[in-house]
Image 1 (cartoon, rainbow over the protein chains, first blue to last red):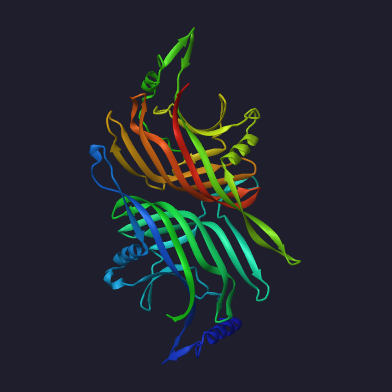
Image 2 (image 1 turned 90 degrees about the vertical axis):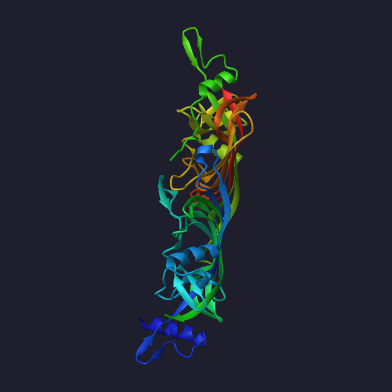
Length: 239
Length: 228
């Protein structure tokens, strides 16, 4: 770890009121991570094909909501954990080591009490790239986004309001989907107790209107709705 | 990839019921083919967020998003600027045409119509139902006469390309309401055929070469059957 990063890490932890950045338990070094968490809420409507009745010329579609709780329960089932075990669980969007040179790609975790379980292999959100633009007259698939920046010269921080297209996928036994849609993401520099942790803009809130298809309990379904993320919080964790 | 609006072949019967003396009429030695076409009014109502930049200080710029409305009239205007020979298309309408509706060779395209003139704009404006997404259908018999109503829930994509000013690729949640084709009480085609299509779409593209994100509604409504 570079000396400048150590200094930065030390200043961050001091600012957060920690007695020390590194603590020793017996002979083991405990590493601390400064992580960003954003609460995530899903509010989807599923149009689910109902089985049977095909021979009668009648086919029935049932609409049902698919909420954050439903997604957490679907993941919990695949994790081998009962839904009771995850009572009060939260779905969070986590970025580990935010602002550091080791900053990791964000992913979803389910939090129960003080325990976080990485569920990014089940639920994933990424910028969509299957849209075209022209480069020298040729159509190419690319990521497109549009942004408004607001610079605060007094502390060199920058706020960004971005419009782009995201893709969200869920892969569990009981529920799955592949959605895509318009998203408005706001970014801001990351402060904690007045100290700058990350000057470059970092996601603060996300509002996604998405649609796509998948399955609910083995039946084909078309989905539409919103996914929102808000209330960014910085936490120092050891894991 | 285009996907046709699926309906069995009944074009000949349709032509008869709709008043054609025969599906194929002969004038002198020339054979005149009649086509049963379905037309839909098309309405685009999009908001475009176009990227632009503003100077900030003496040595840098900041990004700024400029919102603008893109409606059907704007799309017609840019299509007319693109298509050669369309200069006489005053008061043109943008329509969705299903040619030879219910036939195996049904051909679905967007067209511009001015009075009795039509020009196919499918090189510039297209639609598709992307294969990666499923369709869910609710279907019920509708009253007397062996007619059927259905509602499809699916994802539809619209692409405008090779036109000046702007280009886009948008897709989203779509409701396709369909019913049997009936004319003056006669059932022309019992299987449900689209009556209206409404899509809440979003996607990207560019305006004047600047990256742009689009969001809004596309509606195909007012199905009308014409025999030509």
